[in-house]
Length: 250
Image (cartoon, rainbow, N blue to C red; front, side, top):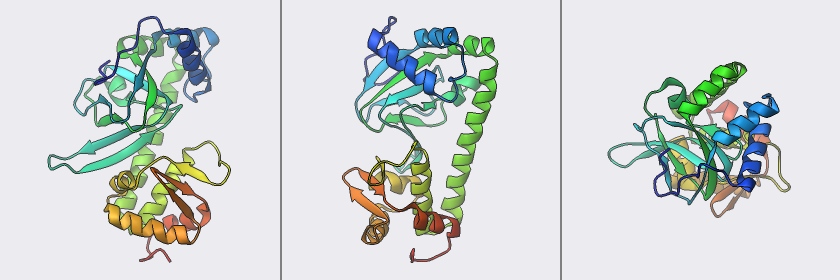
């Protein structure tokens, strides 16, 4: 595993980390149906790392040597151009996995992965993980389902960037991000994302994003916080995302 600027996990996982890893695996939709012995075996393979915000986990073109899971915090999956432009493909939160494409097909990484916040992750080496999957064939179907989910997410993003206006794109992005949360929190659903990051997700300038969000804040659809957006009312945003043809979001 190569995590730039981050201490590597030790071969013997500390007891507290091991418990956190086991709990994460037990509650994860891909691994939750495994027998306890299989979960414990998978947990022994996991290497733990703590990352500071901005740390590079892997870059596009790197070999796909490890599967990663987020214990806490958020990881940004993105691509960038030679002239410095960036596009965010996904934000991976606690309880989710990433890096599965290159691990499964043995090819190079298709995007960059960066710690979007301070976070904790664990990694499982491909050389250990693939034999484990072969011994647990039901996992293959789980990964097919995961890849289908990721493909649908990406297809929705492409559709909105190509076909929708700014209000529809932005509303759709907020809805997709809130749907990744397990449940509504008291007072609204908080998305830990900056306006610059969401501009890179929907393909519009930060200024345009800020202007539209302020309109929605006046209507009490959202609340703007430092480094976060709180969705207060999903219904009008859902309507905009589905319509996608109105010019000003009215």
